Structure formats: structure tokens, C-alpha cells
Length: 183
Length: 183
DNA sequence: GGTCGGCGAGACATCGTTGTCTCATTCGGG
DNA sequence: CCCGAATGAGACAACGATGTCTCGCCGACC
Image (cartoon, rainbow over all chains, first blue to last red; front, side, top):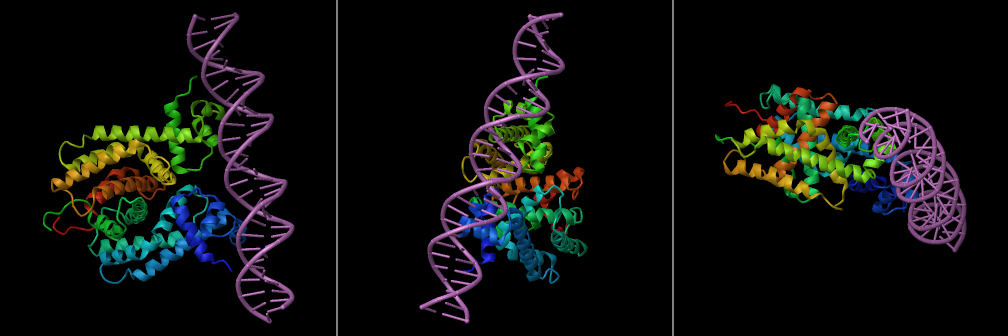
């Protein structure tokens, strides 16, 4: 009968990704538990969001590990990363926009680590001559986050087919919309 | 002594872009007016957001008109559009994420018109052989919105220089991160 | 100079959300 | 089979935000 905190968090992530202003009661109901039980596991809304943030950081970090970014070309590494991150795309979209609400109050240091790893990968691609050097690693990192969130929403709204998730993100981020005639 | 509604809206947009959960009182204070006066002009929070939405649609539509998308190459048209849209980027970022909160309740038909115009421009670029046909116009449209919002936030946080706003968006969207050796 | 309309400030009731509590129930282990 | 821990449901007060009101003030217009 014990509640699975991890499962509750995933359900909450799915709901809050679509409706960031959802009530604690709505979160509890969507997880199939009572509001009191939700409070027993997460002291309040802040604690819930914080737990969600840590879950997102864990999943992102796991995706980074699983993608083995330092193996092979930078491009292939990016493809593996997007593939591994797809299951957590909705959670990531929520957290990225949620972070905008924190007016510099305090940002989890985990984001710094993640940013550094992703940014370093883009920098490696630049140094190896794979990526353009006129787009800064910081911007490419932000753009990756933004495109993941945008595509996750587009899939939810039916504007992009779910099976095209990885392709649309990676192809746009790597190749852009311009058609290269020599290809 | 009459309040300039337009100016109030722009101030509100600047605040709400950064803090979507700002109080009506905060909005009023940031605009330098009293909460009562704010209520006299906008019946409530919903009315304020709706007015903001219509302002955003007007500005976006004006940017589309000014960009003269049908003149010259599709690429140049996109560059002009991003340039014209830059002043309203923060407002757009707010509205795009705010729209995620509307769980299909009702979407302003203005967004449909805007989507159609932007989407048609990408489609024209595809038909003229300028743009790739494996990235759907709908996705390119969403990606444009997403990158504009992401870049607006990145500029606010100092991760991207303000002067690079147009360049970063257009270059990434058109050319992607991959380095083309023949260039 | 007087009047009138709009504004700011504050008071007030209301509503929704939140956090805490109690109590009955149920599931699982001893 | 019994006991205890955990859960669900509901009640409750507290808090913040909201919407409405009044009052005093000031600037504009006549």
C-alpha cells in the first residue's frame, strides 16, 4: 500500500508540464492518491517542485552518461543525447520554464553541472571543426533546451508526430532549415 | 493625468515575461499606478492577460507586415521578420508559455492567422528550393517561436549578448550548428 | 477660481489554495 | 488472527490574491 514516490513524481511531472498552475489537489488526484498523502511525502508545493527538479537533473545526468558524449563524432553524440532525453522531455520543458520564474532566488547547482557538460560537448565539436564557431556553446546549449521543450509541446498538441521528435530537433539544430544544394 | 493603457500593457508585459506569477499589485506598482486604477482599465487578471495577448498578436502581425515576407528570398524575409520581432520578443516568450497553460479552453483565433502566415512563408521557401522539405513548416514555425523565446531569456540572463539576438536565432534556424566545409 | 473627472491609497469581504489535523479503513507482517 | 503502519477522506484555520468600495487629492477644463 506504500506510495511509490518516484511514480508520483512522474505523474506530477506529466501534469505540471501541461498545466504549471495545477493545484496540489489536482496533482494528488492525477497520481491517484489523497492530498494528505501527497503532503506526507512532499511537505508543500515548493518541496514538490524541488523534488521534481532533482528528478529532472538525475534523469538528464543519466541521459548524459548513457549518451557517452566523448565517444565518436560530436554530431553522433548529440543524436544519442537527444534520443536518451526524449522520455524526460516533458519534465525538462516544465523545469526550463519554471526556472524562468525563479528571479535569481537560488538555482540548483545541478543545472550548472549539466550546462557545463552540454556546453563542453558543443565546444569540443567546435574545436574538432564539426560545429560552427560563430554560435557560442552557451547559445547552442540554450537552443537545445528550448527546442526540446518546444518539440515536446508540439508533439503534445499534435503539431509534430511523436516519432519525429528526435529527427526534428537534431536535424534543425545541426543542419538548420536551409537546403544545401551540394547535398 | 489619464493613464496610458498601452504603456501599462508594455510594462506589464516586461514584468510578466520574467515573472509569470506576478501579482496584480506588482503589475500595478511596476507600471507606477495604483491597483484600483489597474482594475479600472482591466477588469481582472484574465482581462489583463487577454489584452496582453491581443497586444502581442497586433505586434506580431505588424512585424509580419513590415517584414514583407513575399519580397525577395525566403531567407531574407525570415531575417527581416526576426529583426522586426525583436522588440516584442519578451512579450512573445510570455504568451507562448502562457498558452501552454490554456488547456484547450479557447485559443485566440489571431494565433491561427499568425501561424498560417509564418507557416506559409516556410512552405514557400521549401517550394522555391531554399529550405529543406524534411522539416515540416509547422515544426519550423514552432521552432522559430521557441528560439525567439529561448534567446529572449538567454539575453535577459546574460548568456547571450543582446546585440547577437537576431544573428543567433537566424543563423541557427537557417544554417544549424554543423559546419559546412565548403563554406 | 470653481467644478468635475480621474487617480492613489487604503479598507473590506470573498474566494481559492494551502497546511494541518483527526478519524475510519485497509493492507501487510508477525 | 491480531496489531500496527500507512492511506483516504474530510474538517478546519490561515494565508494570499482578488474584486469592490470609499475617500481624499490633484490636475484639467470651463
